[in-house]
Length: 497
Ligand SMILES: [Zn+2]
Image (tube, rainbow, N blue to C red; front, side):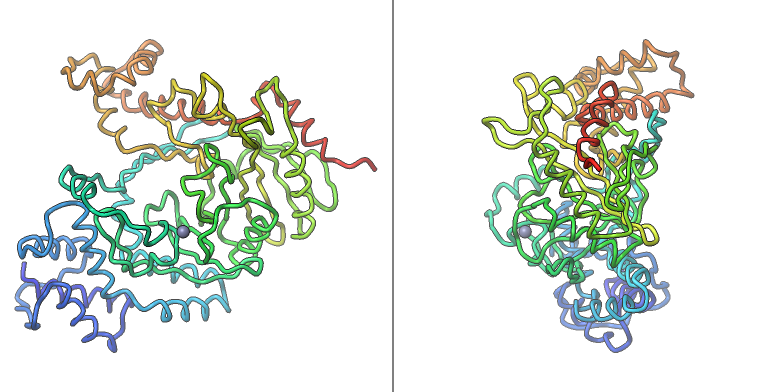
């Protein structure tokens, strides 16, 4: 494929998707020439039509770059290089921010739509990869759970891993969420971000930026991060920030992981939130309405995680009540249930918070968490128990609490072997080793039902869903059989009249 035809195709793509305008034509063209180390441009022979699909254009360009020895043929180098290419046609931040702010003055949803589509069109949100993720539902007593197996994070090949080991470590950018990631060229052990763009927003008088997640675990998966690199802190300031976000952008939910290890998210050293335009299973869980205090309605959800839902038209009053719940939970211990607020290892109680705004009503879901560890559960007592690690070992953060499982890509290949085992086919030694940790679970599935070629995949999917439901139950501080104590805890916040 002729490189000039590919370059012209990308320019046309940019114009067609309104990423660039005709005023940017030569500017972008020369940036692309420089990217491919070309000294001049030649009009392509147009007997061949231009390519219109971005994946095809980038695949052609990467093949050229490998042939021309600009890069090695490896996943990491290809990702670094195609991001550099897309950086050439991604508008300057000021252009995007001005357009976003102009649109937001009239309608915040139009601004979000513009920005999300742009992030997809410049390939920051790699939609064609995300579409490879597997999704299915599991019918659980508290409502359907969403299960996804994430395939969009590329696997590294051995040569890449070798180069990563040899590449010098660096503290720049300080972390994956720092604002200095924008337009960063990346290196073997850090992703390129030339096509990253974010929008400055002010939440509760503090400076933040919003961007989309490149892995998009659900629709319009958004990350909001503080301008300053500072640790996560889930206090009333932070909840004020969440409520301010949903006031400004009511079509998105916004939530914060708990601020402690084990029950928190993967990044605790940079204050951030996650949200988006999605209804995750917990939002639809059945509620038990308990009482109204200070114009705030208190409900308990029927959900494996212990969740208090508050609703109020007043931001100030919902914050006042949230403070009461935080104070009460921070003090709460119940040794019979292994809920210990403080011990020689420090403080253990924490809360995962999700905010929404529906018409004029603020809604806060406060998910009670505890990160205590014990001798036989060293990774966490309210954490998936070891017998479920073959499916899910990672921390259960904000997204999973809401009933969306993000499971590792290794499961796809492992489940192919489990399928053979369930169908009674002969396994090779290496296959047996690869399914070793699934063996007890798979044998159990086999005992419970007759397995046929028709139902085997469904049996596996349902088996995975069932494990995830137990994982959530493990993370709940008040188990189903202790619901009375959960309700008592909530009533302890009610003031006597
Ligand atoms: Zn940071």
